[in-house]
Length: 71
Image (cartoon, rainbow, N blue to C red; front, side, top):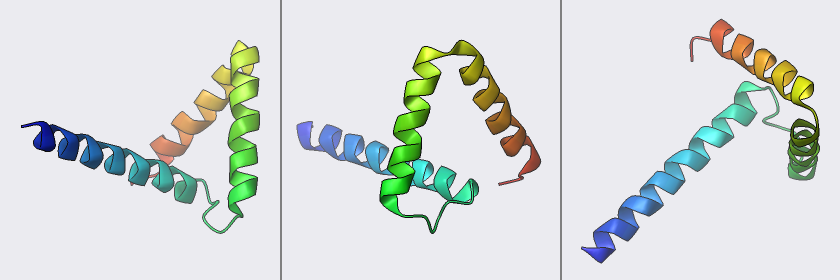
């Protein structure tokens, strides 16, 4: 039973990572260097923690991107 639970947790983790990678591709950043991608994410995380307006602005951009893309 424990092994099944661990296996299910690994599958869930793998699925989440695949979805996150899909976001990178959807944003048009598939071929950028990993260090650049990490820098963008670290910077964005800092900005959205410090500024609710920036969080709202970026959220709106993302929602429009999902609305315009059938995938």
